[in-house]
Image (spheres, rainbow, N blue to C red):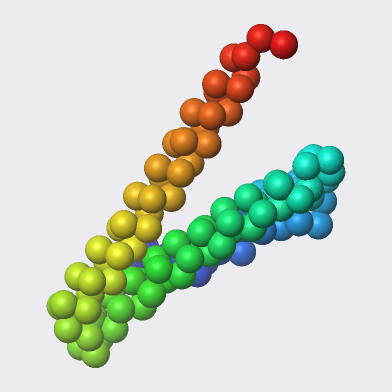
Length: 107
């Protein structure tokens, strides 16, 4: 059986800023805290929104299986979740590309 998305959410540690090496650790660059924190906050918000959209699509799908939601609602929720996931993947790809370009720069 496929487990729900809520089973993996605690493992993601999105927005962890207590310095223990979370996704956006605040100890990584204290000099650029102001600029980095707004970017980190934006990424955290975007990831949270994407996760919320995926959870909503999962809930609507379960409701449809129970006969409480119609097909149109399921299609709308799943399409929205797919769009959010594609945006998250595109952002990840751009960040990886930027990191690789910076790592290739001559010092």
